[in-house]
Image (cartoon, rainbow over all chains, first blue to last red; front, side):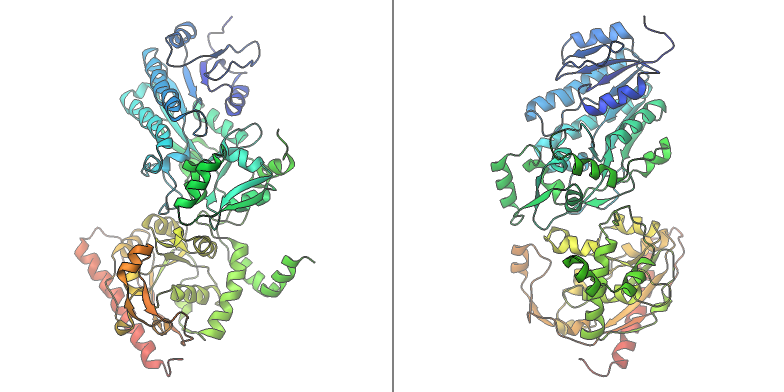
Length: 315
Length: 271
């Protein structure tokens, strides 16, 4: 039987490690429903879990049945997965459907997970990029358009329907046990590619810290867009060294050459359209989020890198 | 003892290591700051620059103690000599001073981050992409920032135009006013003679995507360099029209011009 005084929350992207961390933090105090469009995952008898496409009509049935109070939307297909068109359908159109339904069923709190990739890696990026900075990634590659579109969409709903209380989080590189994104794969490899002569500054947040950040966000009704990143920085090649990865340099000039090489290699962890992120820094300023939500990450970089160093074989 | 530690003990003596360590920088747990400055690499850079500063250019610095010991400050010199040698020497003068040394941040051309190896190396030594947001954030962090308001107009000028100040941008003045940062003018004499250029091949520069392509000797001449630091200039942060901001910029320009003249009159020989 569903207890009435506990908030009902829909968590998307349930097959991902991050969503499962968030679910573990909330399951004692909230009634959760987990969905994912990739696979159905078993999360215990107390949490109904569905494999469902947001664009299908049956998705609305969940809203009718469970009367959600809030939505935590973590189900973003990463840029290294699926084709551009399928990503667009899932990330942009799927999110639109989700937000429309949230509005229709009077949801009071929505947290949307975005990414720092939206800022785009360009040579002229200043460090400590604020939330107000222009989103340049769409100009760099068509493969990143869905990330920017997803944000634009969430932004429109943020202002058009203030009752939804939408908060958009733009985290830096999320890493740690179970994370399957491209940077986590790179750090876990024995040998990782680098662009010769380029070692941009990067930020990393441990998956546990990110899950804490999402829970903090959900629990404080503060609309807006926030970067999430610790106040700590490291150069990409130095990070690889600390993770025990041998570095394989890819010629970086003329710029056409590395693009050709990466397209030919077609590595999932080092795709050509993310090439600029391994060339120029995208250092974001997470201080506004830390201030507003009282967030301070607990896992230092050294601990993160130790995990990768000690788990070189597939986890 | 490994090769790295032998090299380090040779290049970075304990006394230098202590000197750098006592300069407090807002860095993260792995020694980096958001702009890519790295405390460990800096020690090697400092050691190499000492040789260049003391032996090659035999720099004479006057009035480096006029730079405040803490808080935001803009160090504004004239720019010359094709390569950013002037910024390096000013940075070393401030980092090596006995009393309250500071590691300043030099704002560099937008072209450098696109150059493999060099761009990262400059960042690790503390140089930062010359973007107003970067400068603003660093002043807010209480850093000492070296800016060249002449930009490439200054560094790329020909030998026939030596010691003539080119047009100054107003950006640095707006930032100094907003962050209540004093401006320390610096007159650099000698860098004009390090790489005298007789012409600039603009089409070649455009083709290579670099700011200028000077016709000059392919090495840096060991000219003697004089650095004259002026008194800090303070400007209030009142809302004033751009015309008055330009007047304030002209005051700084005049102060630098005076410091250059002093340097030139005190200079006994070119090399």
